[in-house]
Length: 220
Image (cartoon, rainbow, N blue to C red; front, top):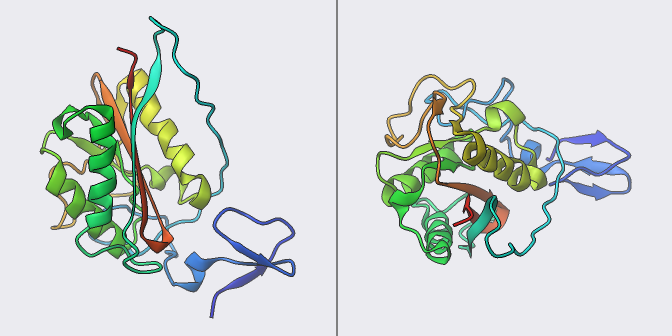
C-alpha cells in the first residue's frame, strides 16, 4: 500500500486526492533510508528532493553569443509502468535522437548529467545505455546526491547543472558515492573535474518508459 502523508499542497510527481498526498516512490519502496548514492555498488534507493523551475527559450539573433539548446530527443518504450527497459533501449534512442538533432557525434559530448536516481534498476540500465553509446573519455555523473530526486522538477534542475558545466568548466562528480559498481563503465565519474566543455547533455527519465535527453552548447 502506498505511504500516505497529510499535505495541503501537492508536490511534483505526487497524486493528490481529497487533500491527501500519495507518493508513488514511497509506495514502490524506491526511497532509501540514508542519503542516496548514485551508481555506487551499495546504492539502495533514491532521496526525495523538492524544487521548481522553468526555462524561457528565445531564438538567438545572428552573431549572438551565449549558451544554447542544440538538440533534444524523446522516446517512450512503454516497457513497464515504473521499471526501465532492461537493456536501456528507450534511453539510448532518446540520446541518439538528441545527438542527431544537434548534428553531433557521441564523442563530441564532454559532460553528461545522468538521470541517476540511485535505485538499483535505474542506475544499472542507464550505465548500460551510456556504455553502449559513449566513449570512455566522457565525464558522466548524477547530481542527485546534492539535490535528491526532485521528481517533476528534475529535468530543469539538472539542465541547470549541465549549463553550469558549460559556463564554468566544472564537471561534477557524485556526492556520497565512492564504491564503483562492477557494471559501471569508465564514463561514470565519482570525482569532480575541471576542463573546458564544448557540449553538455542531460538525461531525464520517467514512469511509463518516458525518456528525454537534451544537448546544450555554446553559440557557434
